[in-house]
Length: 167
Image (cartoon, rainbow, N blue to C red; front, side, top):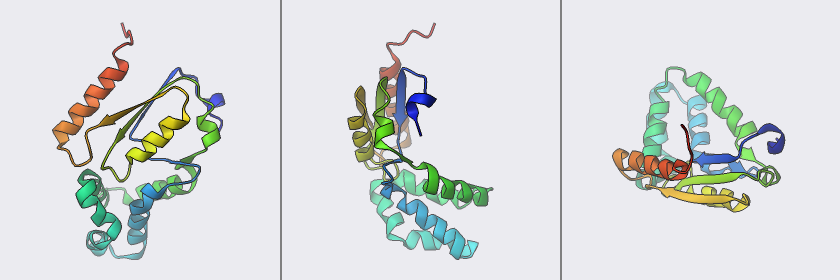
């Protein structure tokens, strides 16, 4: 992917980045576990099987919001389509090359969150280190309340965009 040829913008905001750099996507392991469960187990056993995996159990302490998202995925009305999309993302689109990142010269704000297994803070920090004009913002951790999380995101986005004149 050639970012310089595809993106014509002066400001990039990456909120909760989940893709990997140069093919490194360990944060998608619970995603892969879920795919295997859906493929190999009867529907009636999906949630029970998922709850027993170490990848899912780790989320209980560090990122319960992520854990709840995976539970909800199992009840998605178009789960098969979603699984196809997830497979394609995992195989083709979850990684960006370091050389592509370095091409972008505009302003970059990367918003990360500690205690979020799917969108790890370290990925946000790593991404920001590759952009020459990046600033990292940390929002409320993954185990915070929904209200605290939403307020943290709102406040961070306000800070990022407060200097823009939209009128």
